[in-house]
Image (tube, rainbow, N blue to C red; front, side, top):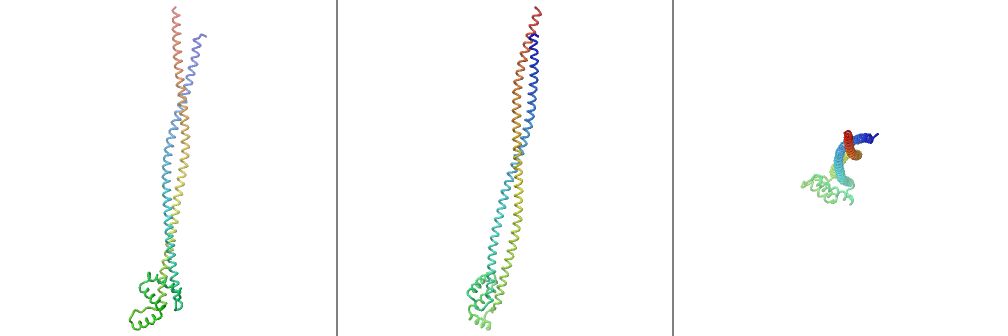
Length: 287
């Protein structure tokens, strides 16, 4: 076999290598481009999902903060109302006790002890404030009669003469006044107790509902945070796929470019030599 035939056979093998390698690299490039497109689309979608989740999480976090503040404020108001109730309850119970002690003292002997006088005077302060003026005068006149026996005689003379208003100097009348006043404060205490019980029950229901809302918001926030983490991992995986596909495409392009350049050069050289040999052959034929 002559040298030209050997070169032709060698070039045929080279052409096969060029065709095979360029075809393989073009396939890699096409597959990589497809992978790049898919990864890019995935990354874009995941980025949008993550942005939405972040906005949702921020909104829920703000809602939780506001709800917690509202719940704390409601609790503070309830504590303040309860403190006010307890103070009023203590005042009412003290008033009821004072009036009861005064009634007990007046139901005893005619002469009041110092302790009894103190109890009656304490009750008298409430009579002056809350009882009608006539009742207040009756109680004052009665106490004056108990403390100053001569006042009773003067009052008797006055009644006989009809020169002044007649007061009921029997303790029963005074006790009745105190009894009515005591009932008034007992009614107020009962109403205060009922109002506090109702307010406490309403607050407990509202507080439980507020806590349920907080728990639901916290659960939603946790779920979205978990989902955001998962999508973040998926995005990182897609970015790795994108990087890998991009590197594979760039590498294949580089090889393809080099191969096509080499194949063009070899092809051009082979054609030049083939033309020279053909020309030489024609020249020899004319000699």
